[in-house]
Image 1 (tube, rainbow, N blue to C red):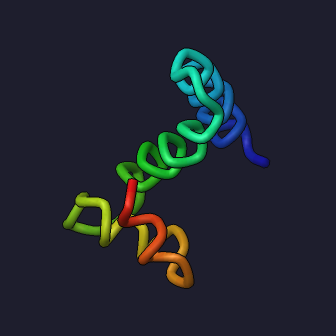
Image 2: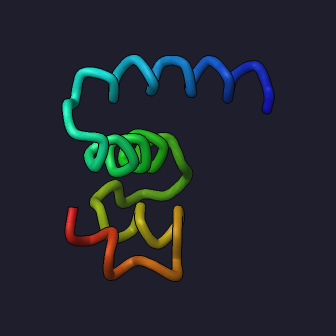
Length: 62
């Protein structure tokens, strides 16, 4: 893991730590990372397709 990725991971850990239930952590992380990825559209479906193409239907439910 590079230095930038490690910093992002620490930041996201602090962010998700206040969300309460652990089921909210992964979707929050995915959403934040999706916002940082290339691509014009930043809605959930295009971001989910870039993060995990095999599970786009599941990710859309968040």
